[in-house]
Length: 92
Image 1 (spheres, rainbow, N blue to C red):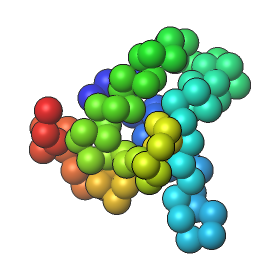
Image 2: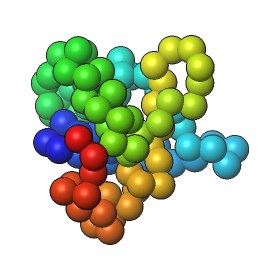
Image 3: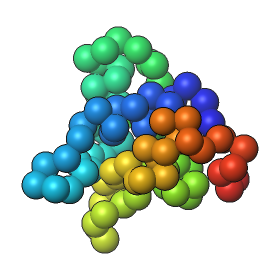
């Protein structure tokens, strides 16, 4: 886990829900918001994509759609942000 991972999870956590479902967005939208809007974490799109894939592998994000690379935060991701789950407990 690193600063990009934490920023991604916090971004998704702040999005909340629409119609009872957590919002799912692609890496491009996350990168644009964090890099262009907030002027923080100036990383490449490939960095965001890689990190989001890793977060999915660890169960902190999920892809709700069969096609495309859209992600949303999971209960496990929210537990991590709340300090209820330690990074050492996550599978590599």
